[in-house]
Amino acid sequence: MSYRAPVKDMAFMLNDVAGLQSLVSGGLYEEATPDLIEAVLEEAGKLAENVIAPLNDGVDANPAKLKDKEVTTSPGFADAYRQWVEGGWGAIAGSDAYGGQGLPMALAAALQEIWNGASLSFGLCPILSQGAVEALSAHGTDEQREKYLAKLISGEWTGTMNLTEPQAGSDLNALKTKAVPQEDGSYLITGTKIYITYGEHDMAENIIHLVLARLPDAPAGTKGISLFLVPKYLVNEDGSLGERNDVECIGLEEKLGIHGSPTCVMAYGEKGGAKGYLIGQENRGLNCMFTMMNNARLLVGIQGVAVAERAYQHALAYAKDRKQGRKLGSQLAPGEMDPIIDHADVRRMLMSMKGLAAAARGICYANAVAIDLSHKGKNEEEKAAGKARADLLTPIAKAWSTDAGVEAASIGVQVHGGMGFIEETGAARFYRDARILPIYEGTNGIQAIDLVTRKLPLGNGEVVKAYLGEIAESVEKARASNDPDLGVVADRLEEGLSGLEEATDWMLARLKDAPNDCLAGASPYLKLFGTVAGGHYLTRAALSASGEEGPKVLARFFAENFAGPAKGLVSAAIAGESALMDRADSLLEA
Image 1: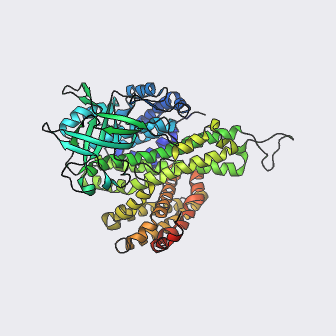
Image 2: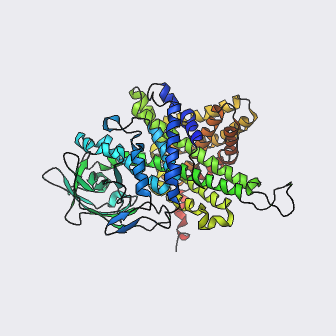
Image 3: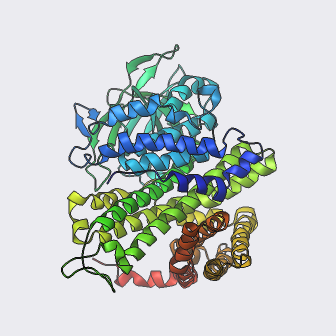
């Protein structure tokens, strides 16, 4: 089964639940009307369904290949990317000063769901380019923006993020790549970077690498890291491409999934030094890179939404077609069998997949709308409120949504039964592809640490309390509706919320004096937070859908099966188990 973008669901969640139309009606994006949003999503869906999705079936048998330090992507990828560029899809949220369309970032995020729903391997390339645009827009010089942004926004050039080295993964203190200043103001970069997504490929004429490196006199640790722009081909003053830079792909990783996406080992300076240009201030590279990483973290969360949706569509089609057993009370003739979708437990699994996808979509779209408010708010107060909400939601969007994608893909394999374990059905591919999502762009454990140690204390705890207050409003509105289904939703969501409030108060009270206890419960706390937040957005959807059956049924299912039971995570979140973990040495031996 191919992929079909759920345009109606996406537009509804974006406009009416995540709050995009409140920005439009407030004069921030007047052109982004509901009709325009739906039309853009429809057109993107056609490209995804007809051009990109069919390519995904061939990526395992024909992955990206490296020969003579040049990478050839999977068959059809380069042509599909050319059509993507010609369609102007990279320019949706780009600044009109550099050829962009100036539409909301939230719309661009929704489009990323479509590209990644069609193929995670393909969709990864635009994600990194979008992050490079954000970093250059925020921290680049006027000259750098003039030289590089238009081509990055159009997609004619692509971007990468170069952090990781063989000895420096999540902890960048050990980073060794060097940058030596030159008389002309450039720098010579030498070092090796690993896990570089689309570090080399044949889909664009130039690749703009953003590389973390150390200056000769840089302080030790992360305080001594700077960010450099290193193009594959140097760019002349007139914008034309010059000579090849001293940067090469020297290896491709063999991976569990996303085989169509080249994951490169990059060598800088094998012939004396790759020419690079400082972005931002010396020794402040992480500040610049985090602009790119925060954008990428949300879009990786969107990948979780995308793979959950794609796995759901695939499993739904199989469940309608596959006949096995007979449901209770079946009226079929002897020897005949019912489609497995008629069995209660299969329906439960499918509803779980759909609920996970929809809840994650709500979280990620709300995060994107908050980012738009932070950029375009009418005054500094609005911008600050948008930034605070986006900061709070980003680790949840990344971690909870990617875990949801893995869970949904795993359930999809289960729906297929034994055939789910067989490659020809395609169900296993979604699971393999999804498994990287909780790992890259900051592992989900790191997101949990970020949420607890950096995001909960924002505004002395007032930012998170305001958000919990909004969830409480959803509970009260559901209860006041006098709808029996929404009454159940209110009760179950309130249970989850009470647990989240308890755990939040516990975390805030202990962060200063017992931080290790907070860290021990950070991951279950994030899972609790994300599950309740997901229930909140599905409740909003049911309330906004004017009594439609579908959103109401989904909200009730999620509330009863996820949001309410999430209260059980409180004990794990607040157990203060650091002392127990310290006693586990005898168990953690080979």
